[in-house]
Image (cartoon, rainbow, N blue to C red; front, side, top):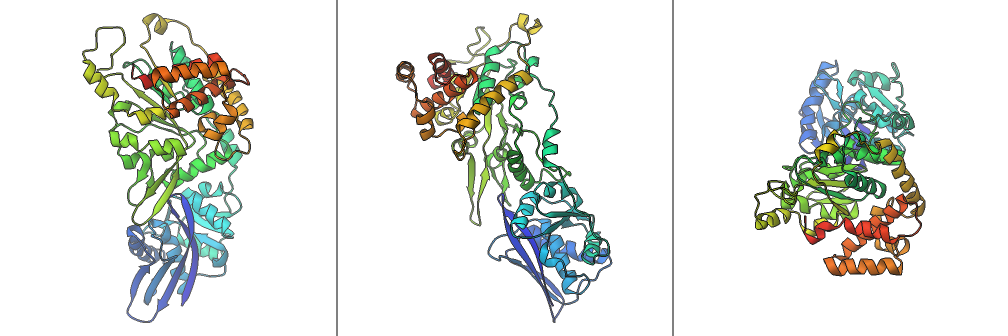
Length: 510
């Protein structure tokens, strides 16, 4: 007796179809799972056995062989529990088989037969749809997540008995439908407004430029100057997620298991702020099984690294390739995966161990060698990849006590949206470039060609400060964004001068 059940799994965030073949043969009762089944899949034998008995079904007293095809790809996770259980019931004649060819199954089984949520449902549902599967049965908590895919019937089941009744057509399960556009329209306000930040006009200006062109930003200043407060208001001035961006971000969060609470979609730009004790695997991804790290969870959002100089050097250095390419590639003995990592990096740090170097007071007791070593914890190649370096001084008391508020996040967000609209039209049809910060050398030659006067000023700046070629290109990108905010077709001298001003750390002078 043989049964074939459809499901799918993920490698990284890329799904692949899996066929669960269940064979019942004569011989001593046994239960074997083959096909490179890893830990959680092998443990599923015990969960499936208990779930069948506690739901009123019988485990066939035969020689049971379950094959997960393709057999040469490692498979892990508890999501194979439900398809294995369905295959056993169909092969043993305890469940109808009519809908198996057009239905996929996914879910973890509790010992009482209940269905529990699993990770990676969204990409799995998308892969099943592409394979021609008409319906997918998932746990109730995963139904909304699967339904955002569209083009496939999503059937939310509470337990194994409900699945068997649906297959027998005695109690069909209703389809779950989700309005993706409606979810994005209901995006809530964070409550964090730029008007809450007193003073710091230069920092607010830099934050607006960073948001408008998707430029990485580093804030340097003494403790209590408001660096973290400013950084946490960046998502509030970024444009809302598009449907495509929301689906891409949700795919990563789905694989990481962050949507198990019944969430359907990531509707706000992610803001990830890992502690400085994070490991390199926690930051870029890894582990066993492989899972996305903080930089991928920040995809289409913001990655905030507070106290940048306190991070371990090897952790910071792994950021260099993702910052350039927008993806992270992890190679292991058994698999190689690729995670998206197109994020906006915002970092904050003190200028010295005590934090008060160069603030105009006598509070700093750090000698010059200690200051230099502290600043040297952030390597030059990493600084090259940060477009804007900004000093954030302490705010005088009269500014803290005053009524000056400046522009609200809503007003700044509108200016950012106008600049992003210009860039969207500029890069229409250009693959992988959505903002000035993403421009490649060919795009720079086309859109950032300086006038002779501007080129002369930039040459003097490069000669005087020893800027690298990468830093020079970053200056051009920032200048292009400043020009877009000013609604200027050309990069003018004042735009380039302001962009050069944001490269202070290339001179290692704080």
